Image (cartoon, rainbow, N blue to C red; front, side, top):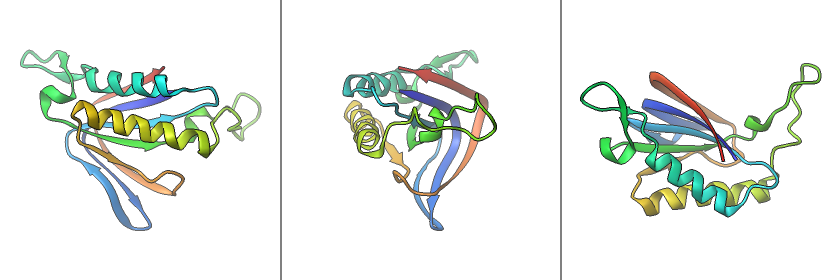
Length: 145
């Protein structure tokens, strides 16, 4: 499981001209799933996102997590995180999990975050999404579970 985590001032997802998910300050997370990812990994990623200390404290150090700053989380499925362009110029997505495998794991991440107390917005699995984001910092991390 792979995630691109961005500390956001605000972020939103639009499908067919309609905003379907948006947050103020918090995390915008693109999540990719590969074939052998498990429910345990999805739960581990959710816990990592909830505890990830990338918000600044009073001394300007990245020492605070989402709950400490009252942040929100936007989760967006992103199969292209498993794109491979080593051969030629057109990426292969053979390492990306099929929708019937990936979608339940993305939903589990969302459910786990909500259980932890997060306010979570989402994209729409499999849709052509437009993502607007103001990256704060900028702070961007790639996390592999």
